Amino acid sequence: MTVGIPKGLLYSKYHVFAESFFRALGTNVVTSPDTNKVILNEGVQHCVDDACLPIKIHHGHVQWLKDKCDYLLMPRFMSLEKRKSLCPMFCGLVEMVKSSVDGLPPLIDSPIYSLDKKRLLEWALLSGSIFSRDKKAIAHAFEYALDMQRRHPTVLNDEGYTQRIGLIGHAYNIHDAFVNMNLVKKLHAMGIGVVTTESVSRIDIDIQTRRLYKPPFWYFAREYFGAAVSLCKNRLVDGFIFVSAFSCGVDSVVIELIMQETDSFPFMVLKVDEHTGEAAIDTRIEAFGDMLKRRVQNDNHCSADGKHMPCRQGVF
Image (tube, rainbow, N blue to C red; front, side, top):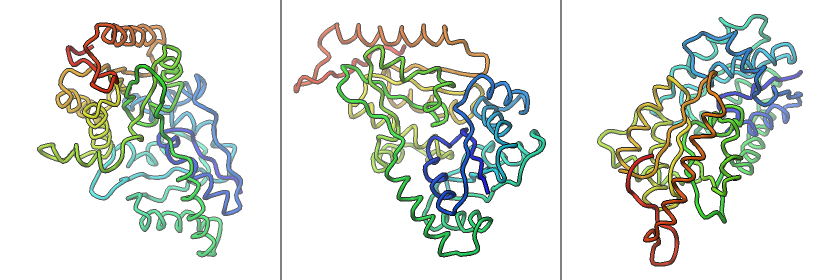
């Protein structure tokens, strides 16, 4: 049996777990290629117009994979943490794909209600039963996959750069080089290091989110707000770039929360969709990088130990 895994949405965060789990059960695993123009065009053609760019891209990956596997992994992410909801697009993704893409193979679409080990094991037992009746073998594959996932964290925390930027946004926007048009590579070429939200501890995120009048309803809003405020207050970055898909409702809320809490800390929002041009992105990135460098050259931005302290005058 061959299991197909689309390289869309939360693939960048959990692909090591998924691939290790199904391989440990004796199946072959095939993935779609990295996002490219062909994948994007297929997604736009096979998805509803009102969907955001990541959802369209996911449809494109499914379209590419559907004839190359016996089963297609389509996890229905209901939540990643207890009492923290995800975007409705995640909850209804299976129905969206079924109604938009013809000729699908059988789907592995058991719902995931939490990344709590007990709840995640329930998903593994349901999904693994397709390929094995031995629950002990499935549990062993589950433990093996968890261990492999822990050994391969998806985090960027560059050291040795004069300036560092906190890269905020959904993992499928940050880690997909096609979506963000090689943003990380371009920042490195400018001599700017990158720090992602995964580098911030759960404790620090909780400390910052507890300060809000009301805890964020959306899981990702909580993560990005807590991580961004922690990076700012601990002076671990010199500014933020928030990569957001056009029409994302969750992002529209969390961006405002971060800007209010971090006062006038350098902050730039990059909105992307299928029509975004790379030249426009390049211009904004270069201007933002130049602005950070000029702030350093103005002196009086160093702490007592000599480390650079970001200026808090104005928003780019």
